Length: 99
Image (cartoon, rainbow, N blue to C red; front, side, top):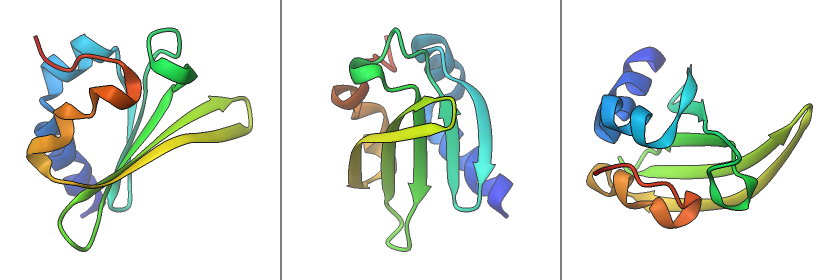
């Protein structure tokens, strides 16, 4: 079931367009979440890791982090995002996800 959840999250992000516009890679299903990496030289604040978590309220929490070796620094978290709002979190990374 976790793989299905991650696939659904990726579909809601707009998989092809999202990957091309952000350079996202290394997608990983993680329970009720989708994890992926973005190029840190593109994203605001050195963000290079994102976790999109499906909550019990059927909304998403997004955790933006900076990963360097074994050190993980959480930069910011956005909670209570609906599926149609996922592409609108540009303000956190500075990355456009649509043309």
